[in-house]
Image (cartoon, rainbow, N blue to C red; front, top):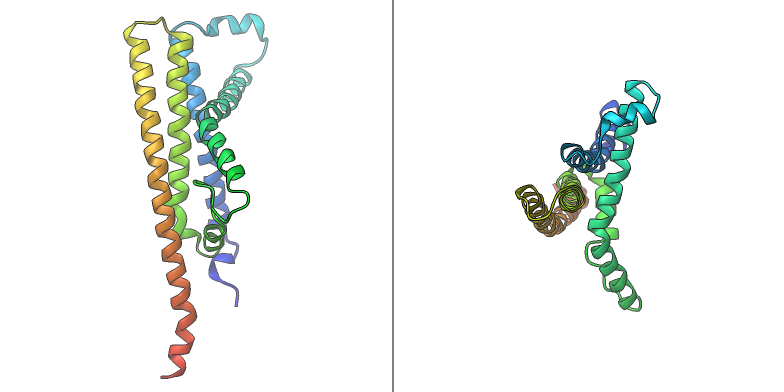
Length: 204
């Protein structure tokens, strides 16, 4: 019998589309924030764009969003670079052991997520928030250093907000790992109860 979760539906297609939009927003919003900081501080002067780019307004908007999206990828990469480097070092250190690299999805998680995707909705949301907060933190700090004069209140505010956001992203990642373990244990227990149910009915 085909599981209900494996049946294609319009709602599942809409959900996948929503997830794609959510993932795109995780890169787009930090990039927009970084560019807006430069615009407010008049380090990025949009009034010069008509002289350099002879194109319609919608094309300029598409160019702006494209630059923001690509910049968001760079910001996210900067935030996760120390963590990814640590994971690579861990992977090399544990190459000859059965140890699991911290923070990486386990095969057990991927298996239960394929069978019960609804139970892992909070983990997906946690990954999105961690990515968004990390990229926003880098956007605030980088915007402060690149577009603001040092020792000004704007510079201090942006850097301070970036540090707080980075700490929030780090703590959110730890919470996400705990939620993932809870979801895996719950999915395992649900599968065990489902497999035991026919045997119980046979004795009735």
